Image (tube, rainbow, N blue to C red; front, side, top):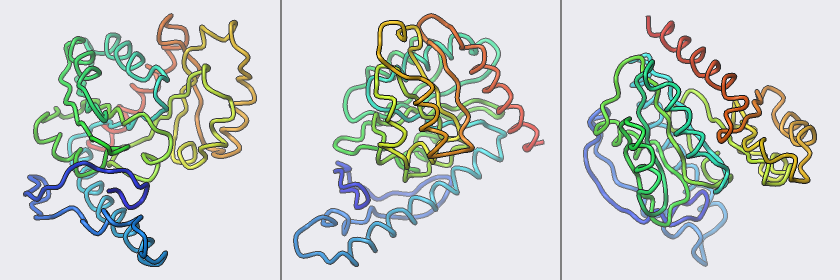
Length: 262
C-alpha cells in the first residue's frame, strides 16, 4: 500500500534496475501505513521514506533523459478528461517528424495502450492494480523495454487521478495537467497540489463550451491563483481547434532539451 495516499500498489518484487544497478525492495511497512495503532509520527516517516526512495529513482530517470536529449512529459488528469484522445491526435500530427514513445498507466486493461499503438508508435502499458499513480521505479523499468531514441519525445500518461500523481516525480521535464470543460471550473482550487505541480494546463474539449455552463475565465483565474507561473492552453482534440499552439509548445520544449544535450 502506498503510505502517501493509501492506495494498494498491488505488487511486491525485488530485482536489479538496469540503469541504477541497485537492489531494492518495496517498503512493506507501507502496507500498514494506515493500520490502527500506528502513530502519526510513524506514518509520516513511512511517507517520507516512500517519497525519498521514489525521488532517487526519479533522479536516475532524469539523468537518463538528459543524457539522451529527450523531452519527457507526465500527463495527469481526472478520468474522462480526453487525455488519451489528445495524445493520439498529437501523435498523428507529429509522428512523421519526431520519434515518439508512450508509457501508459492504468489500474486495469491495456485498452489505452492499444489505442496508442494503433497510431504506429511504441507504447508500453503499466497496470498498477489498486495503485492510483505511476512511480519512478516502474517508469525506469519501462525504459529498459522501450529503449527510446535520443532526441525523442516520451509521453507518460498517468493513472486518471488528480491527487496522488502530484507527489510522485517520475523524472519528467514537466507535468501537464489536462482539464476538460465538462468538469467543474473549481478543479484547480479543489486539487491545488496537482495544479501547483504542473507547468502547463490544457483546457480540453472547448468545442463543447456552447453547450455547458463552464466559466473558462474563472477556471483560468483559479489555476493562476494556485500557481502564478502555470501556462494555459485551450484546445479541442476532437476538432483540432487550438492544437497548433500545443504542438508549437512541444517542439519548442524538445528543442530546449536538445540544446541542453548538445
